[in-house]
Amino acid sequence: MYGYGYGFGPSYLLIIIGLVISLWASWYVNHNFKKYDQFTSHHGVSGADAARFILDNAGLQSIQINKVSGNLTDNYNPGNKTLNLSESTYDSTSVAAIGVAAHECGHAIQDQTSYAPMRVRAALVPAVNLGSNASIPLIIVGALLGMNHTLITIGIWLFALVVLFQVVTLPVEFNASGRAIKILSSGDLLDSDEVPMVKKVLFSAALTYVAAAISTALQLLRLIIIFGDNRN
Image (cartoon, rainbow, N blue to C red; front, side, top):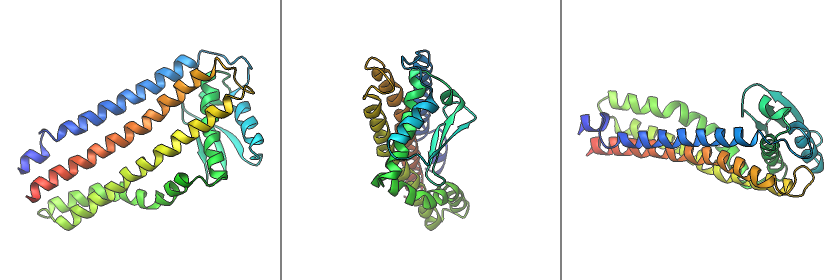
């Protein structure tokens, strides 16, 4: 049973399945962004202009918008109250860029309104950082010390915190996209025929978080199978 758990047995298929799902989700979001990045918005506003318009209308004039390097590295930082748009979003006037910028504004509005799942996710960050850094080392040390079940169990529970964090992230991301679509449907930044394009971009982006949660959950399941077998 010991070799069965650590080798290329059936449990290893869980890692392969998670990897395939993650790779597909990454390809899908990049495919849709590139596709709709070719469509210049009828209003001709940039991602940064759209973000400024949305934030100002939400009473968030104090939030600074920064340009950051990379592709699809857009994020809202609740710590310093800044909206960070990637180079592929900040200056672009494409439908895709405006959608991504609006999504990040959705996170800023969540922060302003104390959206509960966002608060829960923020509260989990310290524990998740510990879990992501210490879980696997604890499990490895436990295995090297002759299957020390206490260390292994603690390691698995810490890894479970990572899964919990990713699950809590899902409503945060889907809600931000919903807010973005509602704002963009008003007609101030996009026309009605452009909104369905944004929906596809944001839906594919949300799938990357679903894929990450599934992949991590499969890793957790594999750890439980391996060390459950070895304990038995």
